[in-house]
Image (tube, rainbow, N blue to C red; front, side):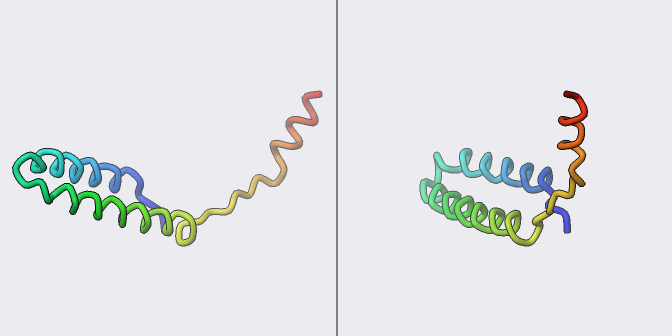
Length: 70
C-alpha cells in the first residue's frame, strides 16, 4: 500500500481554504477544522509509521562508494 501524499495534501489545502473562508461568518467552523486537522495528523502519522513503513535496503552500496573513493 502506497501513501498517496499528493492527493491528501491537495485535499487538506482545500479544507483549510474552506475553513478560513467560512470562519468569518461561522466562527464555530474553526473548532471543527481544528478537530479535523488534529485527528488527521494522528491518523496520517500512524499510517506512515506503521502501515506504510518501508525498510531501506541499500546493500551497503553507499559504504562501498565512500571507501573506494579514498
